[in-house]
Image (cartoon, rainbow, N blue to C red):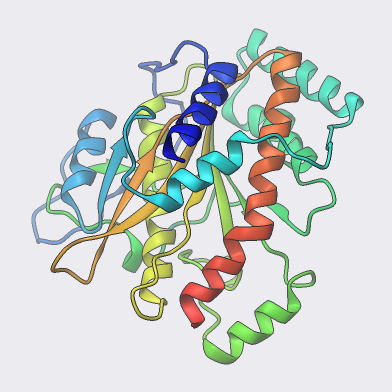
Length: 320
């Protein structure tokens, strides 16, 4: 069975993989914040993204990054990748005009060296909305919203880093009213996510997306995505019942025309009541019109998992 999954995974990676992109330039105008402090020492100057990424493996929870070729050590993570690797059986195809518009916007952003905001508005958000289609999901901007301090990684090194992402897939209350009513009776404070903002905190959240311009720093984006998703996993674990782990989630990084998919999941630490969060990937990148069409199909698969499996599993984990 594992051999079949590996073959499917290999085919999927080969279909979408291109050369890795890791620009050494940090995107301009991106606000950074001091890491959660556990001592009274004064703040130090911002560290390099590489150092911050390494330090996250020393924090609480530990955040570890696994290469796509590594064995995740998690059946749920393998099963999610196998799900994402299979073509959708319902024959879903994105609208040609939508793909044309997104491809034109992507080309314009790339050739004119547009900012991160232009990529978010002109390319990434329309592509996510295309992938959502008629599914009961929405794409929300969370660029100004921070992870609640209680769900941020804690460690003694005083690094400065951004703990925000750009977009998140959310579950609108009007289309998931039964689930919200049921969980409100269990959690009257309506703390349904790891976000400090009161409105977003009262919503269930799924896949997250960090966007950067073509000259953006990949390692910095990985740190942002890792911290954000680790907060979500920590929130779910703190609200869980028994030993049920939170379901794995999908995170994406878009640097210009290059897209990368990551699977984020948690593992138990022997002899501890805390989690360790793993960021596994990346698994694919895209750019041209043909690749954008394929990317839309892959994103639609992400949305389908988020709708049909992620939230039901999450609700079981925090209420059973």
